Image 1 (cartoon, rainbow, N blue to C red):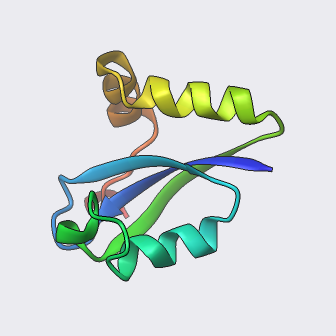
Image 2 (image 1 turned 90 degrees about the horizontal axis):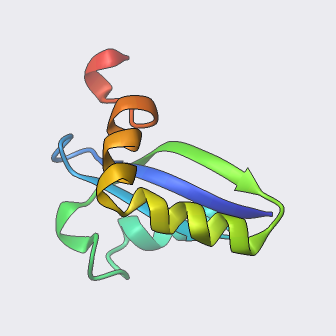
Length: 86
């Protein structure tokens, strides 16, 4: 399975990140232990949403879309759930 995941920074709830992985637990651990320079300054992170794909090509295409302008708008409106809503 190939996963596209959305993270929300616990220290800054307005900071989000979209990524791709085949192992969500390992990847979240890497984000939270500072192994990834892009997300390290905004630790800790929580998993907000993830979607599973059987096709690597489709998963990577969706991740790429989420990182585009219209993908950001889509994720903000439909996929990211702020802690204030819980």
